[in-house]
Length: 107
Image (cartoon, rainbow, N blue to C red):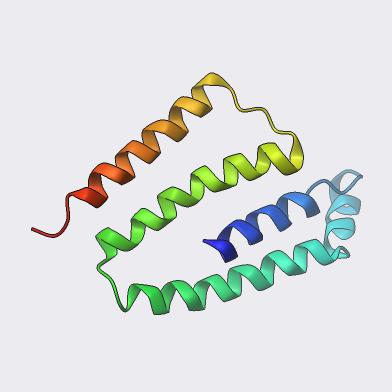
C-alpha cells in the first residue's frame, strides 16, 4: 500500500508541471517526482507478486480497495483536493465492504 500510494502521489505531483502539450511532458520527465513514481511502481510490482504468493487473491485484492481510501485522503491533505459528500460516502461504502468481506473469513 505504501508503494502504490507513494507512486500515485508522486505522479500527481509530477503532473502539476506547467506548460502544454509536449513541453509539459518534457517538464514532467525532468522532475524527480516522475522517477520516484516509476520506482515506487516497480517496487510495488515485486512486493505485490510476493504478497500474492502467500495469500489467496480474494483476500489480497482487499488491500487494493483500502488503497483507494488512502489515496483520496492523501489527495485532500497534500493537494487540497475536494472531498465531496459523494466521495466521503464512497469511502465509507468501500470501508464497510472491505470489512464485511474481511469478516467473512474463508469458508
